[in-house]
Length: 414
Image (cartoon, rainbow, N blue to C red):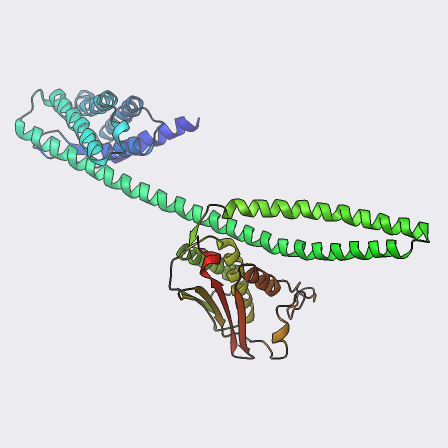
């Protein structure tokens, strides 16, 4: 049914565009735009038969033109038949020649494709002229070949534009999925920070439980209870290890042999940032500028993506109306530097020493009044230190904040 609809739509388009025509000679012979549409259909669709589509197009052109001629009383039925039958035969011979020359096999080669399509068009038109008038002059053959070439070139130009547009859409979709994947991996890394922190807490509980077991050797019942607690906590630790190991294995697959340039990372972060601003309805209130001086290939790009994304979101949250954020990248012989600067509300001097502490926060959800988890900047610092880098912050209340991150080149570059 789907294929039938495709054929019906195709022959309707050919028939309708077949009514756009001109007469190059002082005769009943005419050229139409229908063949340009037929050429395009054969170029775009791989599952359409040249013979079937051409035959059906010939029938539809004959029916449409004959119906129009009858309605406007352009002559007797015999005259209308004589006028339109050769046009239908053009399409029949076009389909036969197209199948004979297998023109669709060569459509990937532009020059060969144009020559084959124009040859089929020209030969079909010569046959139509012979059926219509019984003879054909050399000058007419020259014009037929020229028109066939022009129609084939026109069809190919439209086809190339169509393919480029299709590739552009595919690239945009790929970029969108890639951006979403980066966000997913970034979120997983953030959750891993929680898991690692919980692993430390589990170790402490196990240690305390075992110390109680050692301390109360005379109380067998209490000893048994504390030992049971230690066993259960140990099982929880093993489960956490399995989950953490799974996440780490998942991330290693992405960073094993894959590289990303700084330019590509900038594009992805910029796109994600604009999407965030749209979701928060802040696009008219905040301006974000990106200035990356280099285009290195990065190995640890997921970690860097997580750091920059977190700092940019914090900067956007700190800005109100007329907010401005600058994200800059520079480098020297040994290090790569990133600066995230905003003109937001700033951070109080007495709070500044504590902003990287896990659990510290000044953010509260307006709808619930609950405090944020406060893990963002602690997670950022954790990743920066894992990459042997450093992070500094300067801020003035009411003026804004600047975060400066420094990474050794060998920790980021592939």
